[in-house]
Image (cartoon, rainbow, N blue to C red; front, side):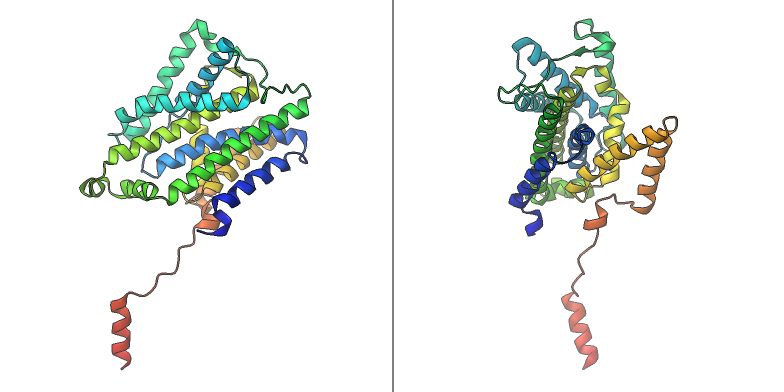
Length: 328
């Protein structure tokens, strides 16, 4: 394992990223918090994509985690930020555990469209549920951290930034270890040829289901982070455009690097913020051009910039013997 990507080194990177929040401008704290939240969902999509399936309905678990945290916070008065992230992850994971085994048998476009349909079903149900605020949603209180209340806006923004960076960073470390494990390599085998995986005695559906639950857990935790940042939740969390934005980040990143997911999410938020500031009427066009440029010049994603080089193949033994024979 490379020293630069050792889990302990990655923990150090997360700590440095948190401390970096003390010196950056206040407006960038909110932007980085949103970017980390979206990167967490996109990371789950990348985990799932390694099995050859892409979910277009991660908004289902994003909204599930957010609404679950909001209801728990209102009913039981749970306002601690760390507890809310854990609750959101649990709600997302439970939804994934229920839905995953049902759709793991589908592949390709059927898998993607089914997840999108389920997300839109939840959106329609939330819009018509008046007890949850209907289409307007409802507000929640200010989050705390281990009993501490942050009244200063700068300190409150830094607290959310730190929680989001730590949560997303830990998920990234977990994903890095997962990709290098036997299970992670088996996920790639399922993408290449699931029938051969079945012949080897491993259930391809089980592999897809586990990856699906992991992606749902990440999305649920991200929904909790978004809820704390906005202090408001509404059915837009489950709308198809929200899910599409997560796929947008995953496409930009590619499936080769965990770090690329965070870089892509931050790049997306920067492009969106500055294009919306200077080109308020055409900022969607700028985002589209940005995505097309990445697809054109980096078809394997931003991660291919530092992980796309393939190791030089060593000559096959039979080729080496043939060369020696011809030389003699």
